[in-house]
Amino acid sequence: MAKIVIDESLCTGCGLCSSNCPDCFEIGDDNLAHVIKDDCASCDLKEIAEQCPVSAILVK
Ligand code: SF4
Image (tube, rainbow, N blue to C red; front, side, top):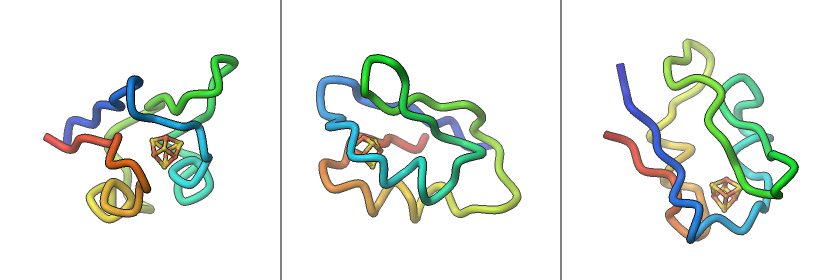
């Protein structure tokens, strides 16, 4: 299983990850992305991480 970490010092809260996979990411009250789950059958987490404009999603 991939381990996903959001670097909160980089995230701008743009919402791209949560719109790409609402099952895995949500934008919190702090306007930053949070990981809901890091094991997803419906998305490619590595691809979503690569699309983050500030490379704030780390896939381990
Ligand atoms: S795509 Fe990147 S910058 Fe945008 S909300 Fe997600 S983690 Fe934050």
